[in-house]
Length: 268
Image (spheres, rainbow, N blue to C red):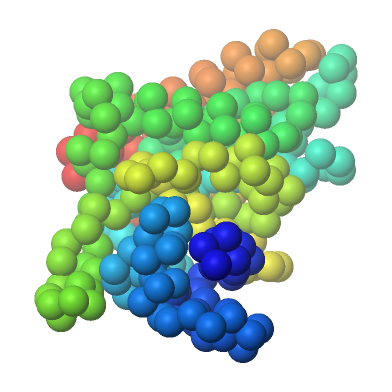
């Protein structure tokens, strides 16, 4: 019986023990709900208390990302990466070396560019490397050993007591629906008991919902790359990081009250 309960739990991971017990009874198994609950508990397959309330809370976070975006650093990051084929706003062609892929992570509230990378491919591993570079940069800027110390919180309803509890909220990392963001390699960034990041994908055919990082790429190209002579990938990487430094530390932003992104990021 326990093996059957475990199989049903694996087949229907969003269902609780009550539905799994009902499913087993519908299949002819004579089991009680409490027996199924104990079986799943022994195997570590029992959904945690407040699971549905937790998912509803994260659904609310996702809506806020698009309709009521935060104005505090490290609550929402935007990321973009081009597909493997075809020219896009986030690719750049040089006379030697062909087309290069540009990947960036930008903090929504402060416009601070946390990382930008230049690669020949746009696979999941390339995207993961850019995110990890962004986390390292954020920790250096704020003199933190662990960026979790600077994240926000979300209210979650405790179904047992009916009380609202503050729960640490991972940083929402918004991407489009590109293939590198849909694979298992990229998904590993968001696993574990206390994840730093939570993945939020834009709606299909709605690239405007990732506008801050898209504007960063437009500014990078029209204010810098198209004005320089760039022969190969090494030169491109140098110019991209030179602009990132200028963008973060020298270029004033009207939306930030003419402050630089670095000033806005360090002093909220």
